[in-house]
Length: 250
Ligand code: B12
Image 1 (cartoon, protein in one colour):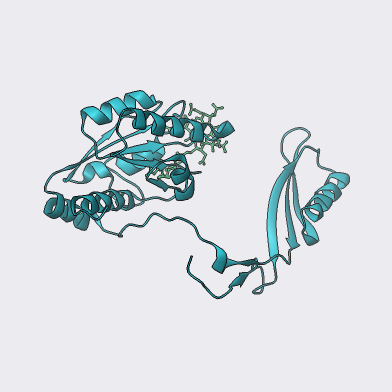
Image 2 (cartoon, rainbow, N blue to C red; image 1 turned 120 degrees about the vertical axis):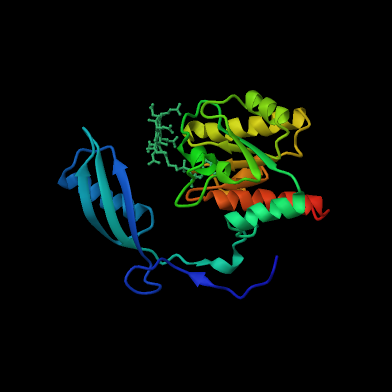
């Protein structure tokens, strides 16, 4: 680990280092003066000082939603934080296509799906489909990429089978539902199956609103992508890895 000088950070409200925090939560209590006091004490018990309950709204029968403000003296040393990150160049559409054409001399094949019980296709569509996301063209729009979107609720074995048939360079898995950690379980099963089928040379990418690179790596994927990911970031990562392999750098 690189030695860095300490860099203490604290929440910022009105002034730097004032430690002011806004917090929201729901309590299983109908809105009342006692419920409001319960919310204040609850926030105090969490370690906040000078607590102000700014909002109390009924949230269905016997539940209330609260927004509270408070202060915390807790500080942490940012210099000590190390997180694995996806490292890839920030290439644009044109640069990605010319990297593939000039360095790989063949089309890149990617296959994606929203797997298991999960039917939330908007995320994987945003990455793969022609129209893309936030003004960034989807992988289908790249002349040097053959992209296949298998859609929703695809079984892990079916996805791997199809990827093998198409000689895919990368498999893109989307997991949105996280109830009872089913996203972790389902994704881990895909990695396990890929190992059994000797397919671990195919790049495995995991994405979704609750996915980040550390989690994806822990599960056994090559990279993880979270909210706001743009298709060109995904394409840059895949192409960079394939070029590195072709040049014997990975
Ligand atoms: C639309 C929607 C639906 C639609 C889905 C339609 C469709 N064709 O996709 C319908 C109505 C079918 C639906 C159903 C359900 N839903 Co729903 N749904 C949503 C909603 C409102 C939006 C999701 C979305 O489209 N986001 C937009 C996309 C663009 O964002 P994204 O997925 O994060 O994708 C980006 C990144 O994450 C990343 N990315 C995503 N995947 C991948 C993959 C790769 C490889 C890469 C690189 C990147 C990447 O790139 C994308 C672009 O930046 C969310 C709430 C919300 N506001 O988020 C709930 C939500 C996801 N749904 C939820 C639930 C509970 C359900 C149901 C279980 C409800 C029910 N009881 O029936 C069912 C489950 C159905 C099923 N079997 O999956 C919960 C999930 C809770 C949890 N933590 O598990 C949410 C969070 C709502 C909530 N707050 O409770 N839902």
